[in-house]
Amino acid sequence: MKKFFQKVLAGLMAAVDLIIFGILPMPSLVGRGVATEQDPIYLTAHRGVRAKAPENTIPAYKIAIDMGFYAVETDVHLTKDGVWVICHNDNIETWYNGNAVIEDSTYEELLQYRIKRGPGYLKYGKLQIPTLEEYLDLFVGTDSRPQIEIKTRGSDYNGIRELLQAVSDKGLSEQAMIISFDLDQLIYIRQTLHSDIELWYLCGEITQKEIDEAKSIGGNVWLSCDRDKNTVESMQSAVDAGVPVSMWTVNKLKDAKMLYEAGFRYMETDRLAP
Image (cartoon, rainbow, N blue to C red; front, side, top):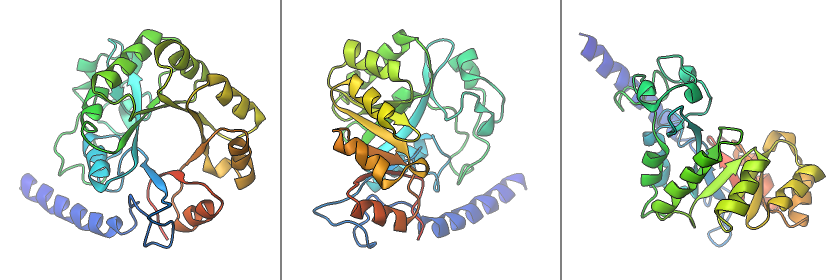
């Protein structure tokens, strides 16, 4: 009887997915009144396609890659025993059936927990916390770009070195983007680990301070800002200073169109509703 009700619930969730799918972000906005084939918008799926699978899970990433998103964003934390795992918060309790701080837990300890919520979570089985390596494997041989946000703060640069090595071992150094709110981490990556990899400095509002800090990183560096805390003018000030800009998150078509007409081409999204 329990299995029967699970199947019924899964069927209902699949039906809801079909409804939601109509407002999902598409890898191309051509034909939706925004952009052209010759001059497109480059969309990043924020934590994967969150309307089709639980965020920051392998199914959510795979769907995004299969749909052809330009990039797929993820959040990584370092466990106590040095494994990079994927979760937005430093505690897993929001999405998993347990309460554990990632940096205080081993990878094996985290594997005892399962995803407890999110679109279609029942049909994907007992999803465990994914690793960075599992995420990277999805991009090998594809055109989508892995966008890796380092959530672990501080000076554990051995962990960051291993992260960059994992990206390199998969042959993704030219394809990947490393993003962080931690300026010192990005400077360390640029000066010590990789002089060429694309880095995005995350920020809230763009001021001259953020522009100067981004430029201090050197090389191929972007500012990725909070859309709600910025105006077209504040974002354009970075572009005028020679720092490209992306933004998170753009979830309405009318906003995407306005930003496109203002000259911006790189946007991160959860979904794009009318």
